Length: 325
Length: 249
Image (tube, rainbow over all chains, first blue to last red):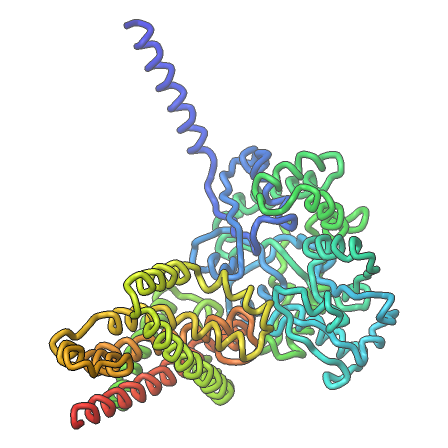
């Protein structure tokens, strides 16, 4: 009987402690841009390895997807933080969405075009002339490609644009010269298939050709920064710590395990090849902190969208990019 | 009949739009989440024409797919009525195939047939085919005993006559099913275009979604509603004319 009473008291104490701990942790929702994959490894790592908890936050990391728009969720109050690409951010800002960019995840846009160097002679942007190029109409690869064509003075009738979907057959069948893909995701899988078939392949990097179109960034609302600055500060500190450690080669095994737990669809061997590529695209040059916002690249992205009339008017980029003083 | 359908649609559209705008101003949402009336009008002016053409393109494919589905469903139902076993087998197969979501089947179709007209047509036909088939099997397998008995006992019954009797006696039911499945044909075509085609209003909606442009989607929905109303009214008109003609025989 005494033992039973003791057990009840002990259980009660544990319950109260747990309640107290939960009360301390502030709960926020974090909507990613895409499904859990290698491009979200740092977000998952920060959650799984307790980085957010150590900063007093309980963060619900939610996968994104084609039907999800983190920016709309922020405005509707369904999430407090999110990940969005620069074109999304600029389109939203152009229409008055009250958002701020806290950190830039990819320093180099992972969107590249794959081609066969043994069949295609390509050494500079001018060589795009006369080529058949895959493009997702309406997608940001279309904006990047059009910026590339404009940069090298190539008119649209000097190339053949091929509408791209999920099916890679047109590229495999050599009906298209250049095919868009994400260097740290699909490129690893497609590259492996081409390697097996004994076909050489290379990638066209828009960044190396002078088109720096910013990809994923961490965003929040102006209201969050004004009303809950401490929460924003703690979230950002924990997230960036998580990202830095996830991309650190010393923590590679843990990062892979965390990712495999969340993304059960991608084979481990593929994840192992994707992670180093992601690291290269995300880590800034030595001496620059992870997550640093590349203002010049943001301004170029805005200029591209404006020149292609994808935003109705100019956007004051600097007023969107937030850093804690 | 047409103007009634159109204004009914306009009322529904206006209510939907009004609710969206009430939400926008009630929650103080930016134009990015819900566009302003001004933006909707501007988008309507810029994209109204191209989107109307895209809807007509989609409608043409939907009508072709619908005709294909009606023809195929009639053929299979006529065969299916021969014995109870074949009828039951076709029904089971139809239920099973219908259970597969088109979004899972569509990519296979697009890989095999490409992203041109054939794929759109096939998917449109597939979506409206099974409801048609199940109803047609029901109609053509059910004997009209009081009429068929006379022809059977006098030895004048042929399979053509049997189908004619059953179709005639169930013409109201068949017309209702055909009109009902027309909406599905339109939806099927839009889904197909959204997934992989390079033409039609589904393709335009996909691009608008990439650009998070709700104003374009609202313009697209307007023309889809108008186009579908036209098609449904035309079908109802054909159905009524057919019934009148049959009654006068």
